[in-house]
Image (cartoon, rainbow, N blue to C red):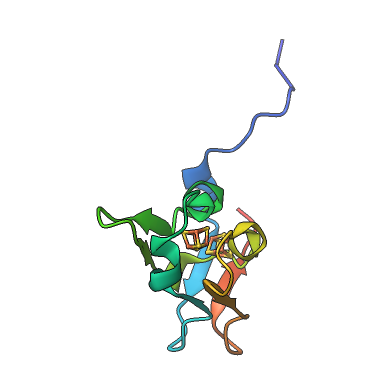
Length: 99
Ligand code: SF4
Ligand code: SF4
């Protein structure tokens, strides 16, 4: 008998159905000076694409190129003014396709 329960797709499979058209202008800019005094680093765990990487000096490395544009980092950020968030320019950004 076939098990018809829904199975979550692996994240790698989801990624294979997504295309990132990288814009020349970063649509998210992170002020790492603000991040150095941030005690939670909430963005590191909240970003589904793992785009925030803590550095040994207490800062953050950020790369906008594989951003899903979900806005979670902006919502959850503890540091006032740390994240400047906007959508990518026309034609750039994430493209969701059916798998
Ligand atoms: S939560 Fe905000 S202030 Fe804290 S490390 Fe992340 S981007 Fe920086
Ligand atoms: S918008 Fe979403 S995917 Fe993009 S950097 Fe923020 S949390 Fe990560």
